[in-house]
Image (cartoon, rainbow, N blue to C red; front, side, top):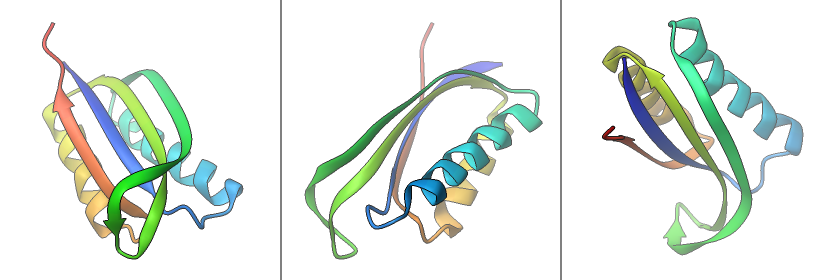
Length: 95
């Protein structure tokens, strides 16, 4: 298993319940495929450097986890098809 760090930005106009639901959904993707979540940090609403899809703010979430390569690919696939995710970035952490 490799260590990954994923930062994703959710739409700022989502309700708190919907935001928590999405965060839990993405966490479940990792844990259901035998990955281990080390830390999930919700940074809350922050101003974006530039406007994305008409949004000037976004709800930032940073997730550190260990998993196989397939898990990060599945996460990115879900980020791409979700209308609630406006940006994401996954990087592999060197040990």
